[in-house]
Image 1: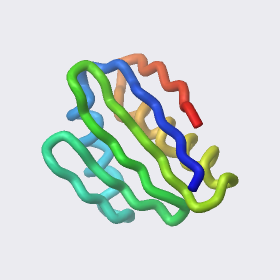
Image 2: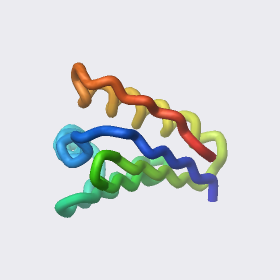
Image 3: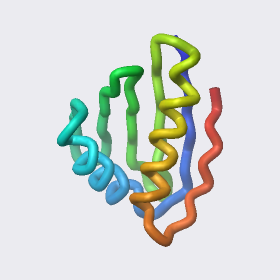
Image 4: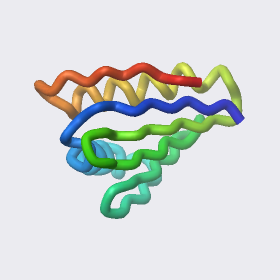
Length: 93
């Protein structure tokens, strides 16, 4: 299974998870607990974990071709939800 992962330095990891889950909950399957979430897309799964001073995001797809697409979707939404906070997002796969 193709995987991609990123660790994003941010003091707002929990807030970002909450905002993304609320945004996606109306059209995607979202499971959320205090500091983590799983979002199920048609092309794969996004796992998010809030740690002190960082947000860890892992993506998993069935096909390699969907990984870049899913990275783009998650990255665009993270940047939008962060507002004025600058996020350095460099995917590792």
